[in-house]
Length: 535
Image 1 (cartoon, rainbow, N blue to C red):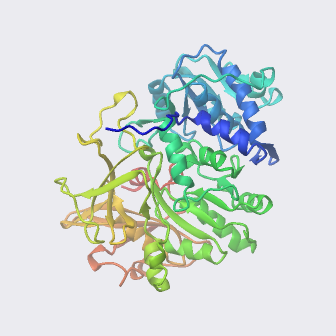
Image 2: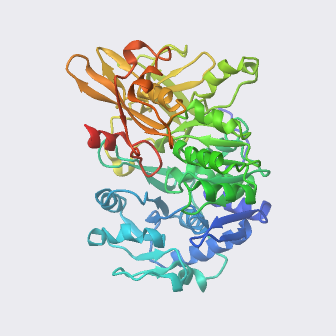
Image 3: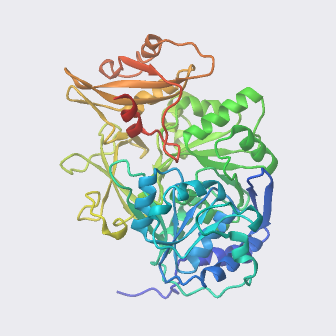
């Protein structure tokens, strides 16, 4: 083999920080505070505070690769933690603040966290498990000294911790295969599992989402991550934006408040944001009620759950493109994104809509295939439906601390648990999670397809479909739906709306109207909880 004569440079998060400081140092970061004010500084100023935090971390007695936990919202201090922890050679462990106490206990001990940084509004979650906390070196509250809450726990104020530290730091030389961050899965099928990202996987994923045929992040963009920073690193946006020179706008803990988001979008000229459908539903409803506009926005990335066509059409009236994406914690998370191929633009609007609602094209760097239950590979013809397997540079190869999993096979493929099809143009459609497919009379019924049909009804705000036991058919689909405000619709009217939109044997016979549906902390429908409540 003739080796190439190119330099070898480690792809570390440190390199993103160094680049952004030098090239995009004057680009602004805006962060909403708890008192609804806005904190502003530049990348250059932000990374000076990162250096101060790195100095403080270096004095805590931490060893290389120790886990440092964060329980926090989307704000500037959380951004500083992302960089100071990982660039110092430690592992940034972002924790979902809405976990049950038992799950929080499990994760803290399984990760063996040594230090916890917590938002003052989320301290009660930590106090609820104070009897079971691991052996910690410190608990740091993300606030000023005067705002430090009273607590039985021994607490340090973040601003006090870093105030006297130098604003320069000599970071260690890191191998790009070193662990950088840790996120746990939602644990819908047992205890949550840890996904341990590397510096290299994080940088490569950041490259991928910045590409024009992906999220298209450049230095002319103003990006607002609504997806929580405790959920798969906010889909990689806190890394990709400094890498690309995009302005960052952090909404604080007001991530589902339509009024606050509209004001933030309009005053900061946000061009792109990313989040789950429930957030966009709330925003669209606010816009309709208030008669306000969001003229600066070009597109919203929507993932975490299927985006109904009605939601896409609703935002199209405001000049906003809804871009479907699909991913998982195990994929860092991006796997597919819906960008329209030029040759398809000649199709009529109805045909284009059928493509828009698909989860999109695979991104470069993630290889995909669909297989049947015997692991035979299936064609991409829009008809064959099978189990999705993936492999790639930012796909996890095993779970943290070697938890046994049947998701990884001997050939290095990861089984996602999704049942999908790929059409002849390579667009993927998720027909269901394998655990949510309804098995009725020997046939499979897609709960996602039925949810989309129900959600497209003008009187329905949101819908979930689960299988309920049936003595004849084993299972039948049942709809749980939330009505639009002041909407009048009967169970039979909703059932009738399915006629001609799906096979007759797929049409549900049971509808339950509810005031709200349960969601996970990341905004996904929580069907596990729904089954607990109603079955």
